[in-house]
Picture (tube, rainbow, N blue to C red):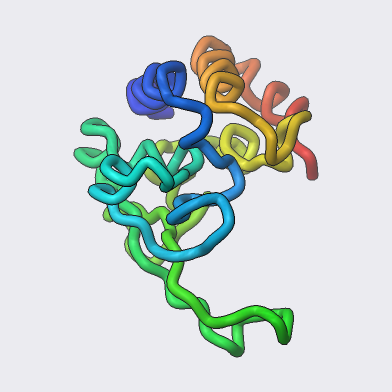
Length: 162
C-alpha cells in the first residue's frame, strides 16, 4: 500500500476549500455540469470541483507515480436515459496499466486490497454520501494508513456498502 501517496492526499484534503470538493465525480467544470477538466483548469477556475482522487492526480507524488486524469467519451449508445446527451468527462487513469481506469486504476497504482479504493473514495461508503466533505475523507485515509496489515481487511469490511 502506497501510504506515502495516501498521506500526501490526506494532507492536501485537510486544507482544501470544501466548496471545491465533490465526492461524486472525478472532476467537473462546476457542480451542475459535466465535461473534461484539465489539471490547469482545476487549479485556475474556482468553479471547478473534484473528488479526492481527481485532486490527487494534481499532486507531485501522484503524478510521479503515474496517475493522471484523461478524457472519456460517453457515446449515445452508452447512455441509459433517452434524456441524456453524449459528452466528454474526466476519468482517473494510471500509466502502470493504461487499459484500466476508475477505482481499479487507483487500486492497482496504490497497491490496495480489493474494495479498498471504493471504501476510501466512493461516496456510497460514507454516511453523509454526496455531502461528505474533504476532511472526512482525509480522516478515513489516515485511519487506514494507521491500521496494521492484520486490521485492514476488517476495516474495509466495516465501511464497505456492498
